[in-house]
Image 1 (cartoon, one colour):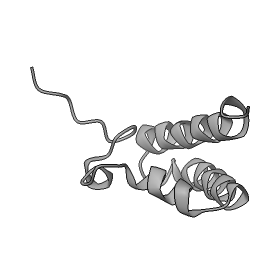
Image 2 (cartoon, rainbow, N blue to C red):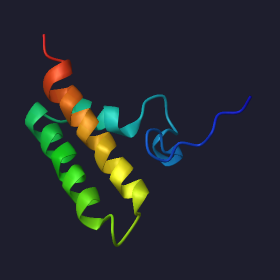
Image 3 (cartoon, helix red, strand yellow):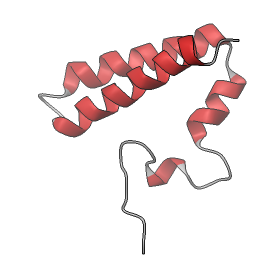
Length: 77
Protein backbone atom coordinates (compact mmCIF):
# COMPACT_ATOMS: atom_id res chain seq x y z
CA UNK A 1 0.00 0.00 0.00
CA UNK A 2 1.53 3.36 -0.98
CA UNK A 3 1.38 6.38 1.29
CA UNK A 4 -0.84 9.26 0.23
CA UNK A 5 0.95 12.57 -0.32
CA UNK A 6 0.38 14.96 2.58
CA UNK A 7 1.08 18.56 1.56
CA UNK A 8 0.18 19.87 5.03
CA UNK A 9 1.95 17.67 7.56
CA UNK A 10 4.82 16.27 5.51
CA UNK A 11 5.39 18.20 2.27
CA UNK A 12 7.63 16.20 -0.04
CA UNK A 13 10.00 19.11 -0.71
CA UNK A 14 10.86 19.29 3.02
CA UNK A 15 11.46 15.56 3.48
CA UNK A 16 14.38 14.89 1.18
CA UNK A 17 16.87 14.27 3.97
CA UNK A 18 16.97 12.19 7.17
CA UNK A 19 15.18 14.97 9.11
CA UNK A 20 12.44 17.37 8.16
CA UNK A 21 13.75 20.86 7.51
CA UNK A 22 11.61 22.37 10.27
CA UNK A 23 13.28 20.09 12.83
CA UNK A 24 16.70 21.27 11.66
CA UNK A 25 15.51 24.88 11.86
CA UNK A 26 14.34 24.33 15.42
CA UNK A 27 17.70 22.85 16.36
CA UNK A 28 19.57 25.80 14.85
CA UNK A 29 17.38 28.50 16.44
CA UNK A 30 16.90 29.79 19.93
CA UNK A 31 13.56 28.96 21.51
CA UNK A 32 12.40 32.56 20.98
CA UNK A 33 13.47 32.57 17.32
CA UNK A 34 11.64 29.33 16.60
CA UNK A 35 8.48 30.46 18.40
CA UNK A 36 8.56 33.69 16.36
CA UNK A 37 8.91 31.69 13.15
CA UNK A 38 5.91 29.54 14.05
CA UNK A 39 3.75 32.55 15.06
CA UNK A 40 4.60 34.42 11.88
CA UNK A 41 3.67 31.43 9.73
CA UNK A 42 0.29 31.15 11.48
CA UNK A 43 -0.33 34.82 10.70
CA UNK A 44 0.88 34.46 7.09
CA UNK A 45 -1.38 31.53 6.27
CA UNK A 46 -4.41 33.05 7.99
CA UNK A 47 -3.93 36.38 6.23
CA UNK A 48 -3.72 34.92 2.76
CA UNK A 49 -6.16 32.00 2.76
CA UNK A 50 -8.92 33.83 0.85
CA UNK A 51 -6.48 34.95 -1.82
CA UNK A 52 -4.06 32.03 -2.04
CA UNK A 53 -4.45 28.45 -1.00
CA UNK A 54 -7.94 28.48 0.50
CA UNK A 55 -8.47 25.46 2.73
CA UNK A 56 -4.86 24.33 2.35
CA UNK A 57 -3.62 27.65 3.76
CA UNK A 58 -6.00 27.29 6.73
CA UNK A 59 -4.72 23.77 7.33
CA UNK A 60 -1.14 25.00 7.20
CA UNK A 61 -1.99 27.74 9.72
CA UNK A 62 -3.51 25.05 11.92
CA UNK A 63 -0.38 22.90 11.56
CA UNK A 64 1.91 25.76 12.59
CA UNK A 65 -0.39 26.64 15.50
CA UNK A 66 -0.31 23.03 16.69
CA UNK A 67 3.48 23.03 16.45
CA UNK A 68 3.57 26.31 18.39
CA UNK A 69 1.41 24.84 21.17
CA UNK A 70 3.59 21.73 21.26
CA UNK A 71 6.76 23.83 21.38
CA UNK A 72 5.51 26.15 24.10
CA UNK A 73 3.66 23.73 26.34
CA UNK A 74 4.01 20.05 25.50
CA UNK A 75 7.81 19.86 25.47
CA UNK A 76 8.39 21.57 28.83
CA UNK A 77 9.91 19.47 31.60
